Image 1 (cartoon, rainbow, N blue to C red):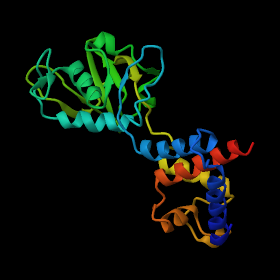
Image 2 (image 1 turned 180 degrees about the vertical axis):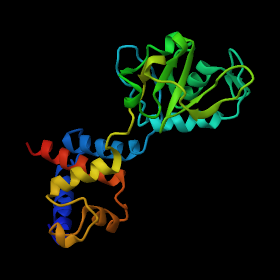
Image 3 (image 1 turned 180 degrees about the horizontal axis):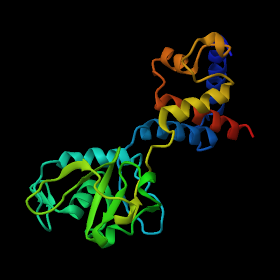
Length: 249
């Protein structure tokens, strides 16, 4: 699809949108579309997370929080002294570190190890662990956050500080491994929206040589309109298509 053809397709959407908009101010499909279009722009980029860890074997949907985010936040507390019962940057124990880390990310988990070992999804073995997974040790008396590459972040014991260190244990030492949030984020935002728009127009979302896809890439087109391939613009165009399809049905 050429650049000119794609621009023409967008102009057709705009024309159909104008035809759907009521002249008398009534609340029909045109007004509904306007509300939807406004909402798409207003909600784009919202990242506030608020969730409670589940014990039913499911992962937490905390608006994009991943295991990598868990590790990154836990590492903020490296060097904090171990304090039994502590749960702040002035001192914390192993389960206090876990609770504080997830709290920073908008996720509520229980306070004690025997409660934390029941949240999220069970992971079969250490070889299957992903960054952000919780590893329960010492018969259920200790918990660590897996950081990847055979490393963990944990608050060891009195006289030590929160540390990043090589895992000293094997599967036989582990009570359970729990995954509370997804290891990686699903395709979303601008990436998913651009892909959907590409399918809508029969073009390519790739930024490679236009000649390889039969025309100018969708990302380049959005950039031409000053959006830079933004999720907001993509969502608005998708909303336009959906509203037009519904309005003329």
